[in-house]
Image (cartoon, rainbow over all chains, first blue to last red; front, side, top):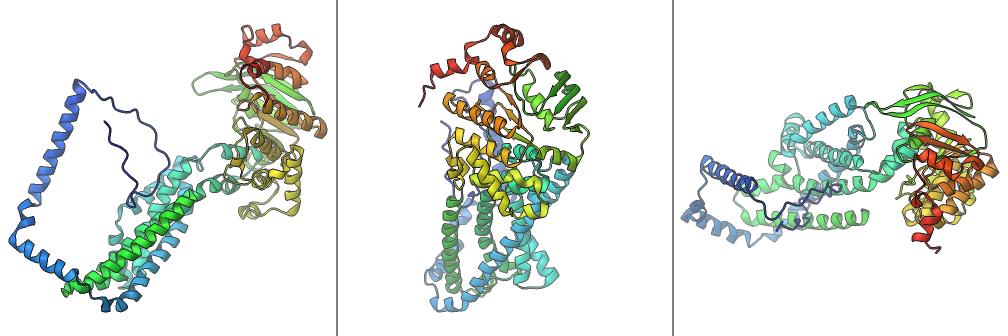
Length: 284
Length: 263
């Protein structure tokens, strides 16, 4: 039996255009096929064991006396959140969401021309699409926290650096998802617009955009979800938002206060996830 | 007037799509091109507005060379040629009116169309075009809410909104049932007669070709093997065009009897 498709969670929530169908694997794979499967599993297990040894991982550490003591102490404090502290963190909480909003919007707007320039059905010239995609891939390889650390170094500590980090991160994500969606649109209207005598821009406005827009908005919302979560930890590198406060409370061992922050963040993230998922379902 | 002079289309793999085509198509004619699939019907039609490039020879529309035209000239020529496709090629999420209005973009600057702005006269032209194909009341519906026949009529309206001198229709009824097929063909014929728009249609139903055409052009393996009035296009002639006797499924009447009983 092949496993059922994994349920769509928020983590993998960006719905890509329908993938190409692969033939289902036959149930009674025989001969070399079976050895190949066995070999793959062996290789996988070897790799896992090698990694465990390299990083000195020890399952027993999970249950050692020290770990158990720490765990019960921290959990004990965390289970009694300091609610009085909540009034102090509303402002940074809102700032976190604001960083995510501004970062998402600016990044997504910048992503539009790049997505169009990357799509081979809009620009059928490899000399344009390949370099643009290379730049895009480069941007996408840099993690958001690294961007944040760089911008903190350049522009100083604060929300501005965090916002810039999310601009770059959203730009990469939205541009990539959108150009893939554009490449999957129905080519018919493009042909029709060419026949009508439209130029490139008119073809984009009347043939591409009306087809790709719902996908684009859906990806922007998804990116916003991801960004709210990212913005919550940007503070650890000094890029503003709630993360700075979480870092401080953790360092001063105030687990009761850290717990308040974590719970509030959870509520905000859940609310935004639900709203965004609802909106995305309406869009597509 | 459309003229083909020694037109050859050779594909990269060496196959000849069009082999030395010489044709003159007069104003107001209703021409049906017939032939087996792969005979070059679609290539011939699409070379007129240069959706397909030709390898050698020249095509002119009203004396202007399509073959030599560059960017802006080519777009101007295309603006005057409406085109209708087998799969309608509408933007399904957009309204009918919006789809028809997109036929007007050739008349406006990039800047004004970029923001989707159209002058009031254009809306009038679009609604008028929809009236001609009897679906004006659908103007504000989304295109994907319409039936296949209605969608094809929207695409005819889009072509009409261009105020074209020529209409090209590439298998316009191939994805429609027999009843809507007739409605769409009737629309095309009426437009041809009332507005004197030269109409060139690719069809694979030969009874339909005889019924609507004023002149039939038969293609086989990229060559014109028949060109004449309907009266001369006998069954024997068709057998010659096809290189074999006519099959039942090449007759709309047979199709209709098989499954598409009138609704």
